Image (cartoon, rainbow, N blue to C red; front, side, top):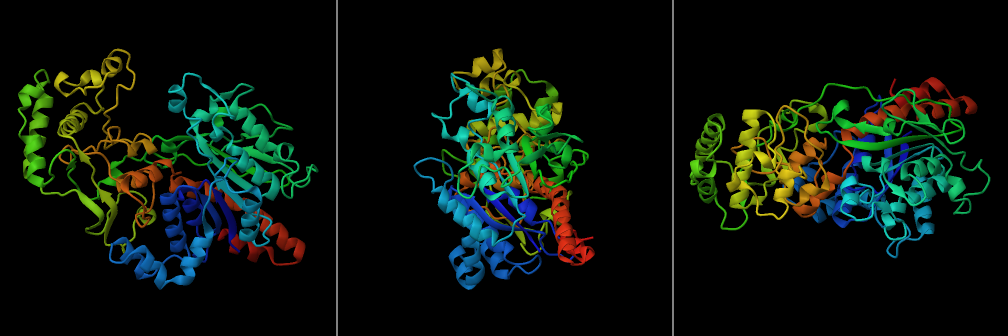
Length: 543
């Protein structure tokens, strides 16, 4: 039996992808996304398309899906050819706003949708990450008052919708993700994180009369909240209120994700289930070269003039390097000259939504990422940049090759400093001094966030010849999305989707910890009903 999953604040589905990709011994999915909820239209389109993909067991996805990815048919035509699967996908992926705002759907409708999706299953999984901008350190630094006010910013209390669903529907397990800034966020009354832990430990205390909930705590006995990285580490309001909040932060680069993404992820197990899920296992860091080296090289586009290959070459190679870099060390000048010579010979174009190319030969987790049926790369097109930014990108990527680090503003030649009012502040006070950051081939990437949709300055490709920022597919590779995961909507929206997602491979590793909890429940159910527990265990866990 597949374990039902409800995914709220789903984004493009990164967390759900990790769980649904976990297979049992028969090669079928151990977890089934019964309902996913997202309010952004483009992300919802991506979510629906991936739900359509999951209507087929692994290895049986129709060729029409790949025809869509290649741009040979429209998504409407794809759904027309497979009406049953399309209907199921549209039923699963719900475009809706959760919370208390004017645009939010009524609680009763949310409860009805969840109840119908679960089809009577009592033991299921709730996953999701309430919108995190209100908790982010950067977001708070831009406000004069760092104290969060739930009345002024409804995002502060969106976790309450998560909490309400726990109180009403009582899942066996939940997984909740948010930004690291949650740890230092405060309201006028208390630490936000402490309040959230207290509430999640006993959700009925906050929502005693909502829906089918009752003041009787037996309806929802509450949850023990476990760390996924420290053993043993859990939080239970009744018997273990002392905790180290840093135990709930996952540093993704320590667990096989090629970026330094640090996020709070909470694993809650209902208190009537006596099972310790264990922790993630640390592995060696994964450099971005391992996930990017096989992707086709692209040149950047030109954003302020007619774009073609010759104009692009001229914009870079036609510059007098000695005048732009008058005080650069000879080793750096030599590297830049070498790269400019290669640029004069470059023949790459700017890419497209589907780029035909040879079979991918990724150097890491090949079975996870690649799909031989694609025959190319999707969502792989370079952005256009101003001429001045092309020279900055050339400089920072060449600098990194020579000095093995990304330059700060203080390392820039004066001629390349941007004409921003706060540049001097960046040099003198080191504030946002790395606003032009090249990612290093032999290191994990810096965190991929939704800010990548703005300008790409923080996500410069390490190859100077390409002289550009990362593409959506490169960001998706760093976020560990499989290559057959197609992102819908305009490119800006695609970047936002990728940046906001939970890395699916990390979610898959969490799913491996969660699955034994349900195996235990299935085994206990089999014993109580007289079924063969060994058979039940094999079907659920794949042993």
